[in-house]
Length: 79
Image (cartoon, rainbow, N blue to C red; front, side):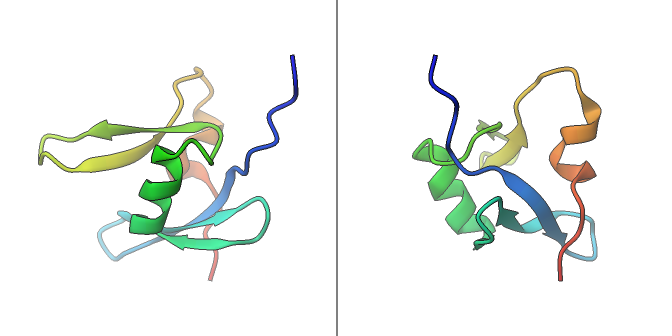
């Protein structure tokens, strides 16, 4: 099995309500939420998936792996 060479999210930005608004990737790129949605949907980012929320919108979440330390909310904040 080939190693997964896709980028991962390593840090996040949040708004005043604590909602995720931007992501930093393992290659150093910064994606706003819409850009991140497109890249996750295209399969370009490892360790995350999309789901449809109660609001009917698509949202990004970490893959369920039983490890809460790698949840998106637990990632470091970047400036």
